[in-house]
Amino acid sequence: MFIDGNEMYVDDNEYDRYLDALYPGMRAADPRDPGETFFHEDGVYRWDRMGGHRETYAGLPVADFRMLNGHGDPDPSHFAWPLHGSELYEEADGPGFTAGLEKLLATVDGSGIQAIVVAGISARDAPAVLAANAHRLPRLRSLFLGFIEPDYQISWIQQGDITPVLEAFPHLERLDVRGSEGLRLRPIRHGSLKVLRFETGGLPGDVVRALGRCDLPALEHLELWLGVAEYGGDATVNDLEGVLSGTGLPSLRRLGLRDSEIQDEVAAAVAAAPVVARLEALSMAMGELSDIGAEALLSGRPLTHLRHLDLHHHFLTAPMAIRIRHALPNVEIDLSEPQERLSGRYVAVSE
Image 1 (cartoon, helix red, strand yellow):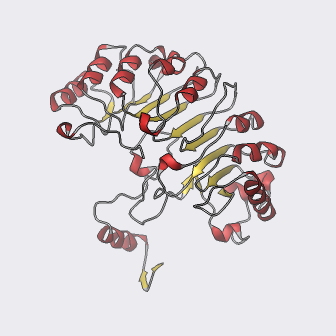
Image 2 (image 1 turned 180 degrees about the vertical axis):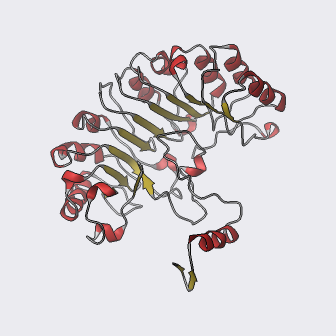
């Protein structure tokens, strides 16, 4: 039974019908894991039809306030645990995250925690605090920096140097980063990381270059929302050279170079990239892809081996969309959300 205000609903089907009527045309948050596939940004970052945020991370439900107050299932491995460094809409600092971590570890046994979501508008100092306490979190495998409700603009989310968590947690398998203000990364070797995702309205070029110099032998899923220059997305095609060579990414199977205002140039670079031959899924969605970029993809290295090609939110003409489907008959292709070309091109997520 569900209770919403003064209304009661017998089961989840009745509640779903109520939500469909209340929020016509709005999707629920995508139930799949963003680290396993590529899907639309409104299933990742935007409000779902219930007016709430995604409630899972790395396949685990995010612990709610009852869990944080010591009520409910005591097994720490059953949840992703929020780490707060301040109030949700206030900037957090190192002492704030230190206090937040102490409060969390007083509630739940840190030796069993497998996933943490750093909540709030600033995760800037969280990597250093977590790194200093790595010995108290020996089973941590998944970390989300910037797990903030999507009514807060993505371009304002504060980040810092994320390298310390990679250095301090050699068994970390997943790292998700939302926002890029102040974001830094140093080249590093990490033998366990399988999923690395950056959701930004503008990914700095120095971060992209550093990523291209990293040695990540276990990485299977790499996702970059490149964004626009106005919000810090100053990466060029040359900055992607290290990633596209695939030298430090021998296990890569899913590559997303998304949300870019230079999507045509990125497509041309991808068309000649050695890494493409080992991919199962390629996403060049959410950006300003036009027929020029699509022509480059069709003229480059073969894409017939792909299982999934994600091009949603695009500026392709109908004839080009037909050409792509005919050229790749056995590939699952997402060409949804065609955009009106006469009004100018734009990315899906920026501010």
